[in-house]
Every structure is written in structure tokens, then in C-alpha cells.
Length: 365
Ligand code: PMP
Image 1 (cartoon, rainbow, N blue to C red):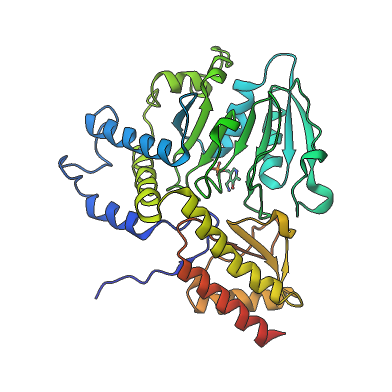
Image 2 (image 1 turned 180 degrees about the vertical axis):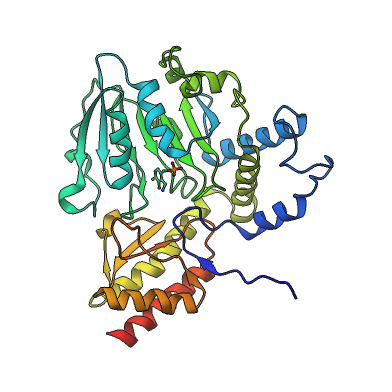
């Protein structure tokens, strides 16, 4: 038989996709039903692709309950390009942008923003090694700022906001790259939401931006055309050739969330169940596993922890690999272990990892 063995892949991204999505892509790759050509071969201007893009948008609008005040854009360049596009479009003359730094990605976002204008740090978790989130009262927010930028889930450190920050009339811009669709999101509380797809929403290649329509007026028409949100909004994300395949797969992931999972509230419940299986093993073996994030700041998506020393850690990765539990190494900048348990990681995969971790702790204490 040529059946392939799938592992439980805990990669931080690109990451695991739902099996039913992969199966549909495989079935329809040679020819889309009713089209006779592959999604890879048809024009972005064809009615077939426009239907696919509109279907993806409608499903995402439904999942996130996106109000009429906001608009979805499908862009390229990853979330890294958003680090620049956001200040290029939203940072106003004579004003500053506030950045809440809860980890590596927030810092990277700030690094690009300072090239475009005045940036202020509203909070920086460096002193606590980004192991916790700020309380609302700790944020130094400027009521005259053009926007405030935050990272809802820090993929490397594993700290996640599970509710919103209060910024008054200042638009909140949020990087949801590693946790979009992990829970219902009150979209109306945000000026701009962005997420590259390759963690929780699809394959690499498309970055979704949900922008409040009034903010489209801000960008200066003299900047390079691709960078201006307004161009993409006016052309319905077809200002240039969009990443057609990635949009198609993202639409299938949205369909899976609606039909197989039952929406984002159900997804959040499952995500809480999955991540607590791992956090419970960490807490029950506190003499062996050291979790990075403080309990109230723990991520549902990226579970980060350390073992007693580097040798045991090496042994952990090798033993896990033998049980088909793969890609558990922490980011090269921080080391340790990181289990990414995105939406598409099945409960059975998390159970297998939790059982393995419990046994490994008992055998190596
Ligand atoms: N923000 C966050 C929270 C991320 O996890 C990542 C990717 N690891 C990025 C931004 C950068 O995304 P991209 O590689 O698509 O530019």
C-alpha cells in the first residue's frame, strides 16, 4: 500500500491543517468540480475564482461576525509586511503609535514601525522575559496616538491575550497571526486585525487583514501602490494577482470550522481542553517541567516549557520523535520545548503528547 503515515506535527508554522481540508484539496487538485481545471491554473478574474474568494470571505465574515464597518483584504508579504504597511497607512503626521511589547513578534513589529514615524512603548515585558501580559492599569496609553499595536498571541514565548485591551477612541491594531479563529473575536473593538495564514488558518502565502473602513482614508496615495490598503480595498483584493491557492485553502479551513467544528465558540472550548491537558502535566510535574508563561497569561496555541537540563531535553525530543510526535523544539531564540496546538491539531494528538510527557517525567525524574 502507498498509504502515508501522518505524524502528530506540533510545528509553530507552517503548521498542521485539518485532514478533511487536505483530502478535499487532493481530490479537487487536478480539476475543480464544474471547472475542469485546477485551482492552480485558473485566472483570478474568472467567475470560478471570484466565487471561491467570495465564499472564503463570506465564511470568514460569518465565523468572526465581521460587521459592515469592517472589510476583509487578502494580501501577500506575510505578517512581516504588515509590520510596515500598518505604520505607513495609519501613523498620522505629528502623532505617535503606541506599541505593547509582550514578546518577540511585538518587538519585531515595533522595529519596522520606528522606520516610518514616532513610536512609543506602552508596556514592555522584557524584565519578566515576556512570561506574562500587562494588566490594563500597567499600560501607558497615549489618548492622542494614531493607533495602539498589540500581539494577541506571542508564538515564541507562548503568552496570549484572551480578552481585549481598552484604548478609548484610539484604534487597536492586533497581530493575530498565531491565534486567529482560536476563539470568537469582538471585531468591532479593533481598528485592524491581521494574520498570516500559515499557523491557524491555512497555508503560507496569504495574509488576511480586517480593517475598519474609515481607516482606509488615512494612507497617502504617494506611497508604493502595493502598500496602500485603499488600493486593495477598492479592487476587492484583486489590485494585483492574489495568492489564489492559499485563499482557496483558507476558505476550506473556514468551512471546516463552520461545519465540522461548529464555529469559534466550540473551537475555543476544544482549544481550552487541548491546552489544559498539556498544562496539567506541566503543573503536576512542576519538579520536572518548568512552564515559561505565568498561569493567567498562558497561550491556548503555543505551550512553552523547559526540562531540567539540555541533555534531558535532547532525549525528550528524540523519544517524542520515535512516537511520531514531531517539531517540538522551541524557537531558536529561546530554546526549550514548544508544543503548538493550533485549531487543526486533533485532541488525540494532544492526548498522545500529554501521555508521553507524563511517562517521560516519571522515567527521568
Ligand atoms: N507575527 C506573529 C505573531 C508570528 O507568529 C509570525 C510568524 N511566526 C509573524 C508575525 C511573521 O509572519 P510572516 O512570517 O508571515 O511574515
